[in-house]
Structures are given as C-alpha cells and as structure tokens.
Length: 238
Image (tube, rainbow, N blue to C red):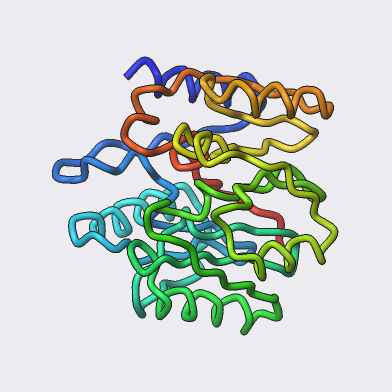
C-alpha cells in the first residue's frame, strides 16, 4: 500500500528503525499494531483485544517481536484491553482509558495492577464508547503538553492531567472525527500527524514543533491514524 510505504519511509527519514510486521491470513486489522500489544519499560506486554478475531494478532506480534530480540513482560489475562487506550504521561505515571466497548473496566484494572505493582501511578478514566479509543481524544505531544478533546473527556481526568503540569491544547469534536489527536511524538519537538489534520498541525507548528504530515487517508477512513499504525519496540528502562 503506498500510504503504508510512505509512513515507513517518513519514519526512516527521521531516524526511526522500523520493524515491519508481515501480513497474515485472517488478520485483516493487523496494520493497527497499537491495539494488540504495548511496549512497557520492562518489555512487551500482550494485551486482550475485544474482538475475538483480533486475539490471534497478539500471538503473531509477540512471536515476531521476540524473534527480533524484544524483551517480553507478560500478558493481561482479565477483561479486555487495547493499546489505543494507554498513554504514558511521564515516567512513573500511566493513563488508562476504558469505554466498556474495546477496553473493559476489568481489563483496565488488570493493566493498572501491572503498572502499580511496579511502583507506577495509574490514572483510570471512562469515556463514551463512541470514540473507540483514548488516543482519539488525548495524546501526549511532549512531556509538558498534550492535545485533547476536552468536551469529551471526564473533568476529573482533565484535572489530574493538569495537576501534573501538562498543558492541554484543545481539539474540537469535529477534528476528532478526522483523528486530530492521533499523533505520534518522535522526540526533539518532532510530531508525525495526518496530512488532513490541518488546523491542529498549524497550531502545533506555531508553538514551535516540527510537524511531519503524512497522507494516510486510506487508514483514516478505517478509523486509524499514525498512532494506531505504529507501536514502539523499545522504551527506556526505569
């Protein structure tokens, strides 16, 4: 697919070493690699996607990742939980969203226990299942700023995030439909974003970020952005 090739090429140009997961029969949603696993500072964590047909993605991704030498941290075995509902706010603090549709409360609590047992704080927040995943409503831009659809997020969650000293850049509900918060931070004030995310991209540029816009319209139509299509295989240990 030319859109997928453009995404991989752009990441490579920014110094990101990409490992491309091979396609597999009966796994049509495999391109959205964020859902099935999550890279923690202690290794790759196997998640539990809500749809039965997506459960096989977990073993497929874990097998290839371990073949690449990626450390394995275990699996979530209770409820359902998907990676698009997880946001690392800073070392030591993670946000976990649950709607009951993709990530269940039971799954969110199991994931929170994984982090809390390792000394981290876990902030849980509920949101309307209409929005699919937390990363359609909220995404970290860097350590001190995030983009957020404030109208659709729980006020308690907004307060908890702001209490951490994180500034929120508002995104409108109509921009959420175009995956306006589904960004990928590459560090050093570099952000990967969808090309049709014009206003948010312009605003971030005015704030001093280098926004790298990619055309992934084919994937956006299926409900996934650059964050959904990518999943780190390395994180700094804590």
